[in-house]
Image 1 (cartoon, rainbow, N blue to C red):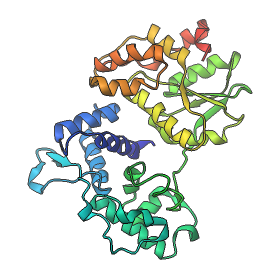
Image 2: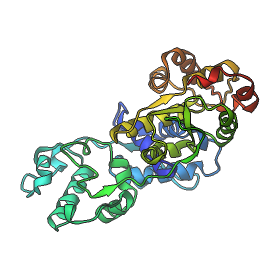
Image 3: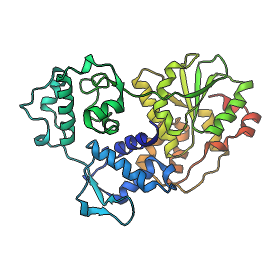
Image 4: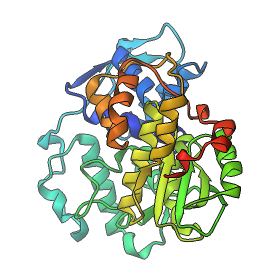
Length: 344
């Protein structure tokens, strides 16, 4: 997903793996910088974190402390810590609840209070004759109807409540809005090459026009927008048999294609593969730059796992040292005077 919802999803994913119940504010800042490093220099950085936490609180992913435990030295106020709610059967759906047949699995499920509230709202909605009798609507419209908050379901989709045999987008009669990819056709080939940034997209378009090789379609992923626009690959002509991706070598540049690949495979689309030859070129000619949040080894290993094995070790070192390489290092001059990069 792009924009705020993308940040919320990624922050929720990080918090899901947090080893303790309480997450102090300094750690929230660290996690926020990791999921969206581009905001580190933004004057709205504090507001962006506050917005993400508000959405996660509405969705029941986190709980806020008492008002006295907020940092009010700047605006907006931020909690000194948040709490990840424990699974508490006493706050879950009560056994006396009469469950709709589609929610029969909820009778013995261990859930948080917020999850119980969601299930009960869905249960009432289904008993009102909704569900299969309603036309599908976008996810945020359904979220507003069920929970009174248009972005609440963004953070809940993908948690333990969702999946085969539990809640699904089909059961909720909703769907993710598919943002169209910006694409240009360069040949009749069946390989789609997606590029993270606009200038590199333009340079590759110029280089591929005369000699496209296996590439049939070139797309601009628009940064994190590709995490949702990957679904529009199904409508690209000519039909796509392989998706290759080329982006920055930093935390966001590696997280985006990995997340897009997971979503693509869930929807029966090809997995998103690294454009290996272009990454080889980037590591050869690019100059590492600092200024990034150094990642711990475990998180760096997770991110580089999407890359071809030959690139994982140097990129893991890049991330743990707080460096990055911008894809623009593989520029027009390089693309038009060399050919090794064409072997995707």
